[in-house]
Length: 224
Image 1 (cartoon, rainbow, N blue to C red):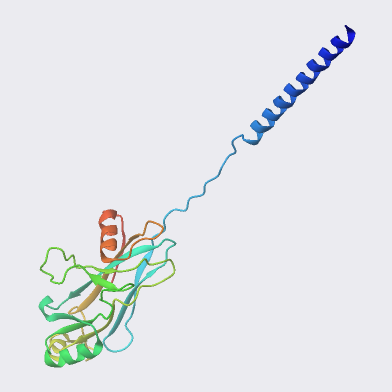
Image 2 (image 1 turned 180 degrees about the vertical axis):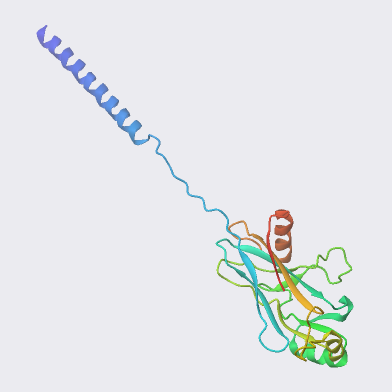
Protein backbone atom coordinates (compact mmCIF):
# COMPACT_ATOMS: atom_id res chain seq x y z
CA UNK A 1 0.00 0.00 0.00
CA UNK A 2 2.81 2.42 0.70
CA UNK A 3 4.24 2.24 -2.78
CA UNK A 4 0.83 3.06 -4.23
CA UNK A 5 0.42 5.99 -1.88
CA UNK A 6 3.84 7.30 -2.80
CA UNK A 7 3.00 7.00 -6.47
CA UNK A 8 -0.22 8.98 -6.07
CA UNK A 9 1.63 11.63 -4.14
CA UNK A 10 4.22 11.96 -6.85
CA UNK A 11 1.50 12.29 -9.48
CA UNK A 12 -0.19 15.02 -7.51
CA UNK A 13 3.12 16.82 -7.12
CA UNK A 14 3.76 16.51 -10.83
CA UNK A 15 0.26 17.84 -11.64
CA UNK A 16 0.79 20.80 -9.36
CA UNK A 17 4.09 21.49 -11.06
CA UNK A 18 2.38 21.46 -14.47
CA UNK A 19 -0.27 23.85 -13.22
CA UNK A 20 2.42 26.15 -11.95
CA UNK A 21 4.23 26.05 -15.27
CA UNK A 22 1.03 26.84 -17.13
CA UNK A 23 0.25 29.64 -14.70
CA UNK A 24 3.73 31.11 -15.10
CA UNK A 25 3.48 30.79 -18.88
CA UNK A 26 0.15 32.59 -18.95
CA UNK A 27 1.54 35.35 -16.76
CA UNK A 28 4.51 35.84 -19.04
CA UNK A 29 2.27 35.95 -22.07
CA UNK A 30 0.08 38.57 -20.42
CA UNK A 31 3.06 40.70 -19.57
CA UNK A 32 4.45 40.44 -23.07
CA UNK A 33 1.18 41.52 -24.65
CA UNK A 34 0.40 44.33 -22.25
CA UNK A 35 -0.40 47.64 -24.00
CA UNK A 36 2.32 50.26 -24.35
CA UNK A 37 1.95 54.05 -24.57
CA UNK A 38 2.39 55.23 -28.18
CA UNK A 39 3.32 58.77 -29.14
CA UNK A 40 2.05 60.03 -32.51
CA UNK A 41 3.64 63.17 -33.91
CA UNK A 42 1.60 65.20 -36.42
CA UNK A 43 3.02 68.07 -38.46
CA UNK A 44 0.55 70.83 -39.27
CA UNK A 45 0.19 71.84 -42.91
CA UNK A 46 2.41 74.78 -43.83
CA UNK A 47 1.21 76.56 -46.98
CA UNK A 48 3.42 79.54 -47.79
CA UNK A 49 3.72 80.64 -51.42
CA UNK A 50 4.56 83.95 -53.04
CA UNK A 51 4.82 85.52 -56.47
CA UNK A 52 8.32 86.45 -57.56
CA UNK A 53 9.33 88.40 -60.63
CA UNK A 54 12.19 89.82 -62.63
CA UNK A 55 11.63 93.24 -64.19
CA UNK A 56 15.21 93.81 -65.31
CA UNK A 57 15.46 95.25 -68.81
CA UNK A 58 13.01 96.86 -71.21
CA UNK A 59 9.60 95.19 -71.36
CA UNK A 60 10.82 92.27 -69.22
CA UNK A 61 8.40 91.05 -66.60
CA UNK A 62 9.13 87.42 -65.83
CA UNK A 63 6.69 86.03 -63.27
CA UNK A 64 6.63 82.74 -61.33
CA UNK A 65 5.42 81.37 -57.98
CA UNK A 66 7.65 79.96 -55.23
CA UNK A 67 6.71 77.48 -52.48
CA UNK A 68 8.42 78.64 -49.28
CA UNK A 69 6.35 76.40 -47.01
CA UNK A 70 6.76 72.79 -45.91
CA UNK A 71 3.74 71.32 -47.69
CA UNK A 72 3.10 70.47 -51.36
CA UNK A 73 0.52 72.74 -52.94
CA UNK A 74 -1.54 73.48 -56.02
CA UNK A 75 -1.22 77.01 -57.43
CA UNK A 76 -3.31 79.29 -59.61
CA UNK A 77 -2.72 82.89 -60.68
CA UNK A 78 -4.57 85.73 -62.33
CA UNK A 79 -3.09 88.59 -64.36
CA UNK A 80 -4.79 91.95 -64.01
CA UNK A 81 -3.95 94.89 -66.27
CA UNK A 82 -5.09 98.38 -65.35
CA UNK A 83 -5.19 101.41 -67.61
CA UNK A 84 -5.72 99.40 -70.81
CA UNK A 85 -8.98 98.28 -72.38
CA UNK A 86 -9.25 94.46 -72.19
CA UNK A 87 -9.94 94.45 -75.94
CA UNK A 88 -6.44 95.86 -76.44
CA UNK A 89 -4.75 92.97 -74.61
CA UNK A 90 -3.61 89.82 -76.35
CA UNK A 91 -1.71 86.75 -75.09
CA UNK A 92 0.94 85.22 -77.34
CA UNK A 93 3.31 82.25 -77.06
CA UNK A 94 6.60 83.88 -78.03
CA UNK A 95 8.47 87.16 -77.96
CA UNK A 96 8.94 87.03 -81.74
CA UNK A 97 5.21 86.79 -82.29
CA UNK A 98 4.56 89.66 -79.90
CA UNK A 99 7.03 91.96 -81.63
CA UNK A 100 5.57 91.19 -85.04
CA UNK A 101 2.01 91.70 -83.82
CA UNK A 102 2.98 94.98 -82.13
CA UNK A 103 4.15 96.37 -85.48
CA UNK A 104 0.92 95.38 -87.20
CA UNK A 105 -1.26 96.44 -84.24
CA UNK A 106 0.40 99.46 -82.54
CA UNK A 107 -2.57 100.10 -80.22
CA UNK A 108 -2.35 96.63 -78.62
CA UNK A 109 -0.58 95.25 -75.56
CA UNK A 110 0.91 91.74 -75.76
CA UNK A 111 1.63 89.43 -72.82
CA UNK A 112 4.18 86.72 -73.66
CA UNK A 113 3.07 83.54 -71.86
CA UNK A 114 4.96 80.61 -73.41
CA UNK A 115 3.91 78.00 -70.85
CA UNK A 116 0.17 78.16 -71.37
CA UNK A 117 0.00 74.76 -73.04
CA UNK A 118 -1.65 71.41 -72.43
CA UNK A 119 1.25 69.61 -70.76
CA UNK A 120 2.66 68.86 -67.31
CA UNK A 121 4.31 71.55 -65.18
CA UNK A 122 2.84 74.44 -67.14
CA UNK A 123 -0.01 76.91 -66.83
CA UNK A 124 -3.43 76.43 -68.36
CA UNK A 125 -6.67 78.37 -68.26
CA UNK A 126 -10.18 76.97 -68.08
CA UNK A 127 -12.10 77.61 -71.29
CA UNK A 128 -11.01 79.46 -74.39
CA UNK A 129 -13.34 82.45 -74.51
CA UNK A 130 -13.49 84.94 -71.63
CA UNK A 131 -17.22 85.32 -72.23
CA UNK A 132 -17.84 81.65 -71.38
CA UNK A 133 -19.18 80.85 -67.94
CA UNK A 134 -16.56 78.18 -67.28
CA UNK A 135 -13.64 80.60 -67.48
CA UNK A 136 -12.78 82.07 -64.09
CA UNK A 137 -9.80 84.18 -65.14
CA UNK A 138 -7.24 81.99 -63.34
CA UNK A 139 -4.31 80.18 -64.88
CA UNK A 140 -3.78 76.86 -63.10
CA UNK A 141 -0.33 75.34 -62.65
CA UNK A 142 -0.54 71.74 -63.85
CA UNK A 143 1.70 70.19 -61.25
CA UNK A 144 2.14 69.73 -57.51
CA UNK A 145 4.51 72.44 -56.33
CA UNK A 146 6.83 70.79 -53.82
CA UNK A 147 8.44 72.68 -50.90
CA UNK A 148 11.45 74.72 -51.94
CA UNK A 149 10.60 74.70 -55.64
CA UNK A 150 9.16 77.16 -58.14
CA UNK A 151 6.66 76.97 -60.97
CA UNK A 152 7.62 77.48 -64.57
CA UNK A 153 7.28 81.09 -65.76
CA UNK A 154 3.72 82.30 -66.07
CA UNK A 155 4.79 85.32 -68.10
CA UNK A 156 8.14 86.37 -69.58
CA UNK A 157 7.63 89.70 -71.31
CA UNK A 158 5.25 92.60 -71.96
CA UNK A 159 5.36 94.32 -75.34
CA UNK A 160 3.34 97.48 -75.96
CA UNK A 161 2.48 98.87 -79.39
CA UNK A 162 3.96 102.28 -80.13
CA UNK A 163 0.65 104.17 -80.27
CA UNK A 164 -0.59 102.59 -77.04
CA UNK A 165 2.73 103.35 -75.35
CA UNK A 166 2.56 107.00 -76.33
CA UNK A 167 -0.96 107.29 -74.92
CA UNK A 168 0.08 105.77 -71.59
CA UNK A 169 3.28 107.74 -71.00
CA UNK A 170 3.09 110.74 -68.70
CA UNK A 171 5.79 113.42 -68.56
CA UNK A 172 7.19 114.44 -65.20
CA UNK A 173 7.33 118.24 -65.21
CA UNK A 174 10.22 118.33 -62.72
CA UNK A 175 12.53 115.78 -64.29
CA UNK A 176 11.27 115.92 -67.86
CA UNK A 177 11.17 112.13 -67.99
CA UNK A 178 8.18 110.12 -69.12
CA UNK A 179 6.80 107.11 -67.27
CA UNK A 180 3.69 104.97 -66.86
CA UNK A 181 2.98 106.44 -63.40
CA UNK A 182 -0.69 105.98 -62.41
CA UNK A 183 -1.66 105.13 -65.98
CA UNK A 184 -0.66 101.53 -66.50
CA UNK A 185 0.03 98.61 -64.19
CA UNK A 186 0.17 94.81 -64.30
CA UNK A 187 -0.77 93.00 -61.09
CA UNK A 188 -0.32 89.29 -60.43
CA UNK A 189 -2.72 87.75 -57.91
CA UNK A 190 -2.18 84.15 -56.90
CA UNK A 191 -3.72 81.52 -54.61
CA UNK A 192 -2.40 78.19 -53.32
CA UNK A 193 -4.06 75.24 -51.62
CA UNK A 194 -2.71 72.15 -49.89
CA UNK A 195 -2.21 69.16 -52.23
CA UNK A 196 -3.65 66.25 -50.24
CA UNK A 197 -2.87 62.59 -50.95
CA UNK A 198 0.11 60.36 -51.65
CA UNK A 199 -0.02 60.95 -55.39
CA UNK A 200 -2.17 64.01 -56.21
CA UNK A 201 -3.29 64.37 -59.81
CA UNK A 202 -1.85 67.09 -61.99
CA UNK A 203 -4.45 67.43 -64.73
CA UNK A 204 -6.39 70.66 -65.12
CA UNK A 205 -9.47 68.97 -63.70
CA UNK A 206 -7.53 67.72 -60.65
CA UNK A 207 -6.18 71.17 -59.82
CA UNK A 208 -9.48 72.98 -60.38
CA UNK A 209 -11.28 70.39 -58.23
CA UNK A 210 -8.75 70.91 -55.41
CA UNK A 211 -9.48 74.65 -55.32
CA UNK A 212 -13.24 74.10 -55.51
CA UNK A 213 -13.03 71.61 -52.64
CA UNK A 214 -10.96 74.01 -50.54
CA UNK A 215 -13.89 76.45 -50.64
CA UNK A 216 -11.93 79.52 -49.66
CA UNK A 217 -9.30 77.82 -47.50
CA UNK A 218 -6.48 79.15 -49.64
CA UNK A 219 -3.36 81.26 -49.22
CA UNK A 220 -3.16 84.24 -51.51
CA UNK A 221 -1.03 87.27 -52.30
CA UNK A 222 -0.91 90.07 -54.85
CA UNK A 223 2.21 91.43 -56.53
CA UNK A 224 2.11 94.56 -58.71
